Length: 81
Image 1: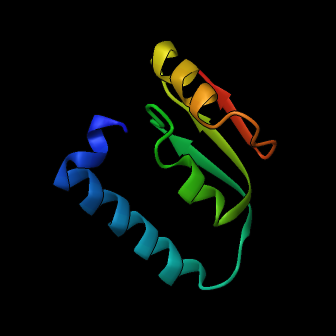
Image 2: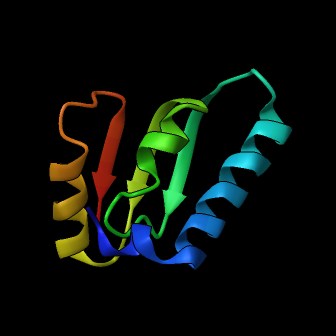
């Protein structure tokens, strides 16, 4: 388990983003979404529920490598530094 998941502020942020997207998009999925500052890719599976394809990027190469491993096998997800 990722340590950030144990921190209440992480859970609050995660829930807020998910709730905001649910309200904004209702049951609709957008064709493409961009996640800037993806970090270790923790939010990417949740974001994929709201889009057909997710482009996720971060300036930290090690974080992107971790995210790629964490979310391996998701063909509708692209990572870049």
